[in-house]
Length: 257
Ligand SMILES: [Zn+2]
Image (cartoon, rainbow, N blue to C red; front, side):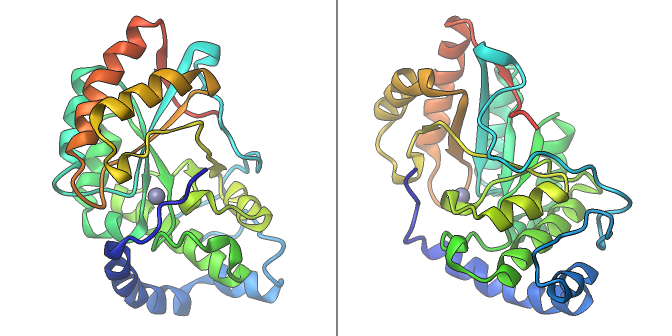
């Protein structure tokens, strides 16, 4: 699983996130409790601002399977929402009758709550992709991982109008046992992928389509992006790939929880 690194726009996101973090850390019951307990025993019963009531715990191992079974495909769209690209992705998914899972960056969700609500209204699912997309999450302290996951959970849930993210995908796949357990305790199933289109590197539409065709037999969860730069290749690839998958007898579902 390659990690997408060297992404300047995330530096800007991080700067924006720091302001949020300072406020969230001061008010977070969760953070205080996690620190008291050494961050090792996240308790699902502790409610956080923006996430009312009890949350059902889910499995903590990384999901790859589709709820549609052996011929199911999970389209996952990461790093948004983005005001230029997300509406185009939504239209394309609608045109093809496809539901997808959007792994959102907390600061992006906070900046574009209208888009988060559009994603939810169209029947897609939300996934927590941390506050600031740090692909070195797996080398950082538990307190840092907790802040990145729980603050993003609050930001996405608030932006959506109360709809919670159902999955957690670590940036670059940088999961840890701690972060998986924490996410699972908050009802967010750790989410992996099987097919990396590498659309972030803009390898060309034909290459991306060929990757999907040759690797879909590896597993059902396909990785695309709707932010972080020019995503016109992503749109063009989806326009080819979605009808092809249907022709092959695949149906579109959500990752298992
Ligand atoms: Zn990402």
